[in-house]
Length: 551
Image: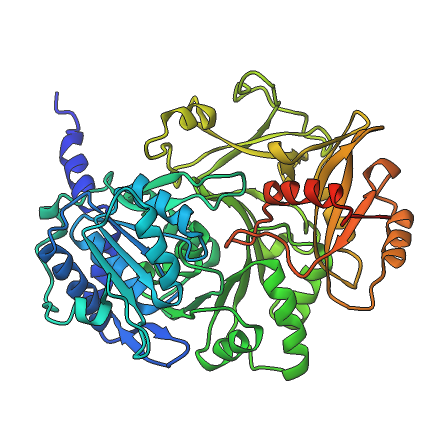
């Protein structure tokens, strides 16, 4: 009897199911099409030119002794060099490791050590931090490169990027397969954004990369005619893999590289370059709305806006639909698993505030929480929108590993499910609503209070830009709520806000903040997530030093 020999396809799949092969197919079929534009300068690269730049970087890395599996760490804003490195490393089997350019020198030193970086590339704007990080790190990269050095600045410990690749060939190096590039090999490493503490290295392989970009392409209905702009940094999962190089260069579309966010320049870039999809966080869109109302930029090419990093409240969603474009998407996920739930345009604004339903290749559950163990995957909370549990995810887009941290893995992965640490409720239609993280829950007089619920109410006030709520010690109740508030309108007073909260039908007395402080900004990750753990430390000190005021 003749039976199917699966080994033949398995070999083919492992050799060819790689992100870089997808990009090279586009070089061959779309060579003269626009691949990337630098917003600030207007400089452009077609697919053939972008490939040539990636080749220059790949050849230079080879000449420096970089071999398959070596880590190339880079701290860069959304700039052309980021894309050159992202592609160039994959051509030769090196691991590209984009890192938050806002980290402190100590945090960066830790990552250089943890990743054992062979090459370290940084932006000139953070030169002092990079220099200090290299001094602090016990591991010294063999090559250090600076991007964007101007004539007035010199770094004796680094070579400029232009000089680094100046003599390199633009020809393709050997076939990626000859460097050991394969479907299951690590292509990218991302360090978690640090909402709870020290970052962890998350390995992403080619299967993860491709299924991730396929997911984005399917949900957004991307085509080669689209132009993508991510106004949050590319170095995180939602940056590189939604509106960054990941999906754009895989589907044959164009990507706009913009170094930093400013509402006016962002709207100008959308108009000037015919951007069709924008990716950002709610706080960015609030600022852009105010600017658009003043100046009325031409946004006629926009097909959709994707919001990430924080819940999208109903009022903001409606305003975005009216001012920007009707097609709004809202995603929820993690560095380890990408986005796992989405609110699609058909869900909004009715389901605004929720995280959405499971994506095409994902399964999501909300399970009970125990102090001494992870819940079984089938130990689910009621689908009644009330019982709180932990979100768990099963996905092909995710990494089921941490670099050098097997003990962390045991806390997160069980029976093929990833336990996110996010607390949520879900309803009869399996729409997820995030209420807090495990570590952020506040117990007031024996009652569980989830910061997001209180924050959403406070942010309904028209004069509030954003806020964060944490717990502080309280003799009578164990903990009390403290609200840190960023004003949208300087005329906002504490008395006005207190009256608003007292009248709100969704905020019982025990959920009302006892303390408050108006601040200029909140501690945030680069992905727009509030760092409650940092604010808890600050709040305890503010309470002790009487900087927190009573409502």
